[in-house]
Image 1 (cartoon, one colour):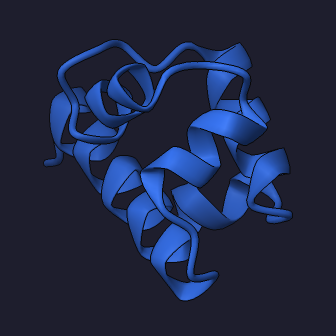
Image 2: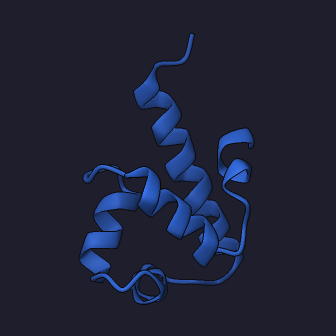
Image 3: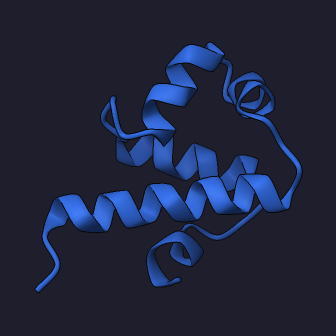
Length: 72
């Protein structure tokens, strides 16, 4: 059985993969989300909590339905 932590790590890996597919840097994402690159990097690398609101904003910035990151 997958733990919650494992599922979050999986979602973050899927976000990173999609960002890379779109040839976007962490700096690009931070700019789209009106935050610092350091702050965005901490989220993507699992060192800062990913809120539902931020998750939805990331999905929107990547022009991808949020379900893509959960289902993949």
